[in-house]
Image (cartoon, rainbow, N blue to C red; front, side, top):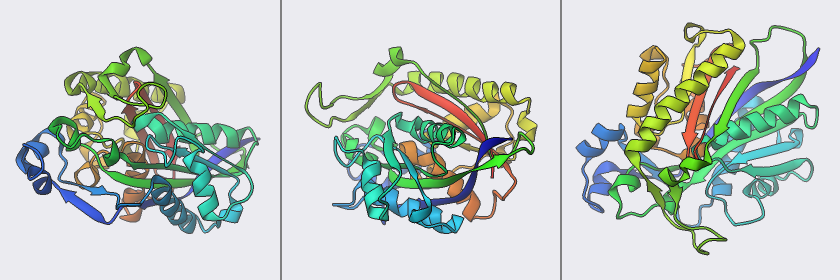
Length: 323
């Protein structure tokens, strides 16, 4: 008998303000048609003035806890994937811990940009399986629009703000191996960092900086690396694409989602797409999409879910779990 992690609940939060493509066309040389054709995005949410990443993360965490039927007192671990922390330090997860009223356990951030949620999920899963903790909130939350150069139409149209969360709980398990959180495959390649990065930082410029990206090269590497990560997960488990009930990818760009689905022979009806409503919310996009699938009744308890992501750094990965 060994410990295994199970997803007990999902949750999300989106800021109230919505910025449409038509709104953006008044700010930069672009149009709704241009953005939709190249990205599939129609709108994005933007954090209000004074609304911090920890506020978004806390709201998502509360929503997930309510879905799980648990309270903050039941939680002893918070792992937050984010690229947009409230402060340089302490970790934004500690602010979430305080806002939830937790006084015990541990809380820390994981920084893997758009892959942040999967890196956070795999980290929390490993810690629960080792017996270090019993119940974790895994969060992806971003105020990514604060990293944008609003004069750069190649990047400012792509991103939005929001947060999503899942509650993980460990239990002793001697049942089937394809239950709960099954496996992960995560990788990085720092030699390609110049393809997607922020041109500022504490020890380099002393500034926040803005997102810079070589879109075409990122697209090619994304499709190749994501497909390889998915295949690695399938090879490890002996499962096939046909066994998967839902594909919940990072919502970077609909063209990337379509290309990966085509390359891996994933049925379009199994792909959860929210990029049109949320844009790319970086580490928040997978838990946002997962919660959308659950709350709309598409993904149900017992369904097998495959998730993937790729982000700056280059970081990428895939995770497989059963709801």
